[in-house]
Length: 369
Ligand SMILES: *Cc1c(COP(=O)(O)O)cnc(C)c1O
Image 1 (cartoon, rainbow, N blue to C red):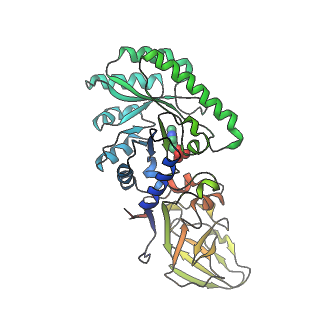
Image 2: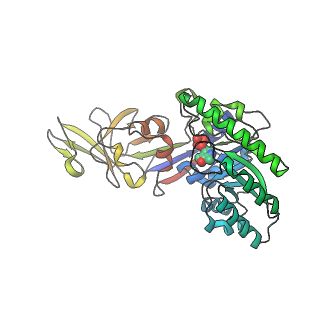
Image 3: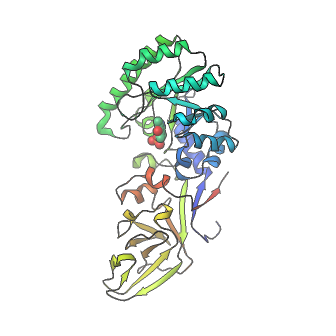
């Protein structure tokens, strides 16, 4: 590995392949795999990740918003792309770029039908999203008749899949609720098929769903976080490899005396002579202020260096009093140790937020192939 000379997010495509193969091994051979690459592939690098996933043979990709799908098409991606949360303003470009919208309300359905019609579409692929308890996006069971009526009249579109999303698939204590969601979904799906006269694809599981409810894998699963190396519980994490490692280096060391302060608002005060290291990344890079003031540590030469004082926009300071280190030494912010899950946990957040929040200022470096 070349020496780190600036802050980089290293993206290991071999780890991505490992995680994909692990998740696949939990599924029946005929179950399709939708890889969720929204938010720059959970803060990594969407086109490179999607190209690798395409080579690995994923059946579908999913993004949250239309512009993310357009970026993938511009990157040469040919795999079908589901847009999970399209907005009406983007329907024309969704069709132009061959993206497949998730249709989640009567209003959105009518707006999409109008655009599809005005663009002379026939059997344009759409997906129907049903709300079974998350109460975020989706039709309710009461909308079924109206949705079916509109769809039976329309030749512009064809329903490729009808899906739902679990609220607490990682939460063992919510097992009864989750099984209920799956049962509600099955009822809705059955009625919809009867109304339409054909059977779309059926999918409800995210990563933790694959692990905890494999019996509900139906025709396809949608996995995001697992592909990036996190499984929402240690026993799953043990089989996965973090795809992204955030690395930086020590810019400067300071030797401070007793009762000296470090950083803005003098938030850290030394209790004894200490050595601090200044690192070239801050909250503008996605390491928020909640990681400061001793909450979280980074790893330097295999040892824990706590973040001290307030996180600045472009820098953080860590305590290296007990660590044998030099200016220019490599620093692991998160990756294999600490993992993004461990790092996030110290500030009461989750790997999803930490990973997807690494800002575009941080250079992405792809390793593996
Ligand atoms: C983000 C998302 C997923 C992926 O969830 P993971 O927990 O990352 O596997 C799946 N489905 C929908 C609807 C999503 O919004």
